[in-house]
Length: 359
Image (cartoon, rainbow, N blue to C red; front, top):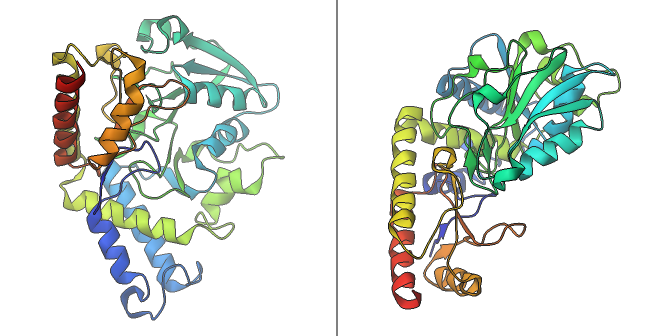
């Protein structure tokens, strides 16, 4: 029996995608082989890759003057790729710090350039995002980087920052495809696949073409956006199965009605879960209401000693992956695109029963 998987990533995938992959696993469209077995240079896989890119462009409305790259190394690899591709030696860039993944991006970038942190939400224990009036990008900054959604803390930007004329760069791993996104407002959008796009193994980077050709000479080839764009993301052997599955997920999103329909569905799921938390005298959410994530919902109980019993009882009830990140504790429900509203309803029903028993 399948459970409702609330893990932050690798995350639940659409059942329809998994079933189709199962059907095609040993014989992809009469080829007599699995996608895992075919050459990435073969006409069959080149077609799979091109179809996935076309769907990504269509769903997100990616302008023609942007490259769509399917890379390895996850979003963490792009923490290094961003400064290596966008700056020369001795340059500086501006970053916003809203939590754990912002900190990691900043730490990696500091190996290559002078990082200027425009806003650090430490004072609120990373439960808020900075207001636009605090974001004065300093002269000479090569770009402004921010994490659109902090997966661990459940903090999300409700607006797109004004970068003051320099390229805006965002890690959109937890929110990509959850709603429409105006890609034209960004210089670079990158996202690990293992949340809303498919299985782990890929990171998608969408790069405005005028930003290509700037990589430092020492940039590794697999992190060089220009080299990867010229090679159609196949400078080396890509994770072909993950790329194929990503394509199936994109097709599934199309079948659901595209990003406008996904936004309505995701808003409804978030409202249901936050509404249950807010109406309770037992559960609480530590994030400022205006900065609450649609995708990652942390919540607490009055007594920390109840956290492990909650997670264990939830697992027995078929609700998996609800333990909070080891760095913060508590509980966390990740409700990405593939989580059906029935799963969120099952969670809030369980939460109500647990509160009645332990409140």
